[in-house]
Length: 190
Image: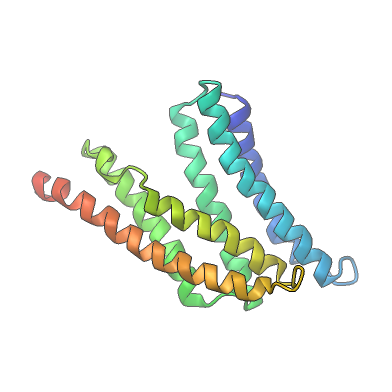
């Protein structure tokens, strides 16, 4: 396993997951709900920024690796899934939204692994549709964690709109990846 700054940032993102989740288990006598929500949203934003920054550094410093390419999406999926479960627990996101997003992540991860095994990983390479989905999630989730108005803008409403858009893009991108993989699956007779 190579150790470099991009991989350390990815591990940092994974390490922040228990911090975000743990904040919601602190007694209110230790931390007021508004402060808890602020810290959780801030921690999620920092973790999301490391996702962009570690990839940028890996390319800039030519420190890309097979391990980093594996770990980065795993960290993203863990972070988003943990946040969605917390939001579900808090009643800030509907169960069907969480199931759609988490289910898609599991499905596409399995599909990518399968396509790699049959030598067709290019057919399910990351597409801009998946990037739009990720962007919508990465803005929606901290809005829903924060859940307080900012300069008269309701993060609750904005977060709900964006998470709904993310769910639509989630289904759309999943169908796109399945469609792209289907010819390779059919060709291999699987």
